[in-house]
Image 1 (tube, one colour):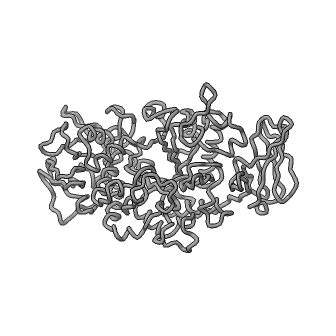
Image 2: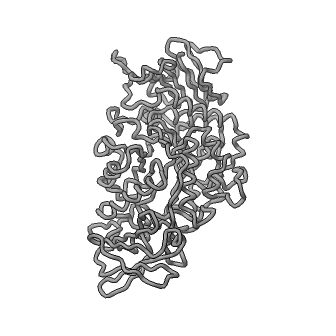
Image 3: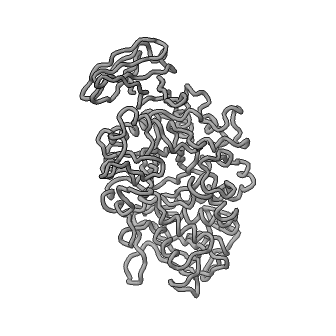
Length: 585
C-alpha cells in the first residue's frame, strides 16, 4: 500500500496476470474496482478520508482464470493475524517529527549497541512512566533508559520490529510475515503501532542516538507468498526443490527483479517514514550480490548497511567479496574473525595461532595482510550478540575480564558492537539461545548502580575512542617489520615470550593516522596491552614516559590520565585478565 497524503489515500497492488481486482473495505460492504496503472499494477482511491479509514480492515479480491482469490495487502502498513489468516488494516502513518535536523555520524565513528527493544523496559528497574508501558515502544522511551544509552554514547541496533509470527513462542521476531507492517505486540496502543515506533526513533534522535533495524528478508514473507506465489518469492534448486539456507523455511528469491524491487522499496519506506539510520541484514549472504549492490546504490548515502556474511547453506557471497565485488560499496559485515579468537583470548584458552588471528582482526583484517577487507570499516567487531551467551555469562561474571573484552573491541580497527547490557554484566543465566525466553530478555537497570565503576569506565572508553583518531583508521595499517619503512602499528610481545610462544597476551603501539595532524593533544602514540592469561604479563614499553588512560585492573578510565599513578617507563606489568591503554602525552 502506498499513500498520496491529503484527504484520500491511494492504494496500489502488483498483481500480474489478474483479469480484475477489487478492494473490499470491511464494514462498507461494497467492493471497489481497481484500475490498471501499468503492467501488472492496479490502483484505487478508497471511499473515505484517511482519518475515517484508519483502523479499518480491508482485503483484495483477485479474479484470474475464472477463479476468485482473497488476499490481504502484502504491503499493508498494519496487519494482524486472525486465526490462521492475516488481515490488513488502514493506518495513518503521518507523524510530526520533533528532531528533523538529526544527522547520523560517520559509520566509522559509531559504537553499536545491539538490543531487543522490549528488553529495555520489561524489568521493574526501567522506571517506565506507566506499568502498561513495560516491554513496549513507549517503554523504550523511558527517560531512565534514554539517559543510560546517551551516557554510553552508542548507536542502537534493534532486533527485528516487523510484523512477525510468534512461532514456538519466539520472542525475537525473526519470522517476518509482512515488511511494511510493524510488530503490534510491543505497542501500547495497537492502532498506533507505526507512530509509536516513529516516536522511539524521534526520542533517540533527540538524544543524539542513531537507530538501526535488523531486517529479515531471507525467509518468511508469508503475505508475499499469498499474493505472488511460491515460484516468484522462493528460490529453487535446478531440480525444482526449494532452497533452505536459513533453517527457517524456504529461502527468498532476492534475485527475482520484482522481489528485489520490493526489498529496496521496503528499505526506502523505512528510511522515509520511520527515519531509521541503518539496517543489519539477517543471514545477509543469502541475498544475491546484485541486490546488495542495488541497495547500496539506491539508499541515501548516510544510511549504514551491515550484513551477516554467512548462512546454513546456499550462500550467494562471503567475506572475501568485501575486497572485490563489494569493495566500492558501504557494506560492512559481522566479523566472526574477531569474535572467535577474541572470545578464546578472553578466557585464557588461546595459543599463538589464536593470538595471530586476533592480531589480524585488531588491524582490520586487511587483504594485504591475509584478510578480506580494503578498509577497516567493513568489519563490525564484537564478542557477544543476541546469538550465543552474553559477555558476562561467557566469562562467568568476571567483571575485569568483561572490561578486558570491552577494551579489546573498542581499541580495534573497524566498527565495534556491544551486546545489550554488557556494561551491566547482563546475564541470561548461561542460556545461549533466548529466542523464546522473554523472562531472560530483560535488562536489570539496577545493575547500573551495582556496577557503576564498569558503566562509567565503558562510557569513558567509548568517549576515548571517539576523541582520538588512533582507533578509527580509514585504510590499511602498516605493520612495523624492521625494514625501516613508515609504520602505523608495532606489536609488543610479553617479555621473554617470542611471537610463537603460547602466552595469551599481546600489546601494540599505535600511531595516529598521518592525515590527522589536527589532533594536537593526541598527536603522539598510544600503547594498548591486553592480557587474557591467568598469570601476569610483563611488557617492555617504547622509550618515553607513558601516562595511563585505561586501567583494566582498577576498572578506571581517565582521558586526562590517571593522576595518582606516575608515568610508566621501561617494563610494565599487566595483571591477569586485564588490559591497559597508555599515552605518550
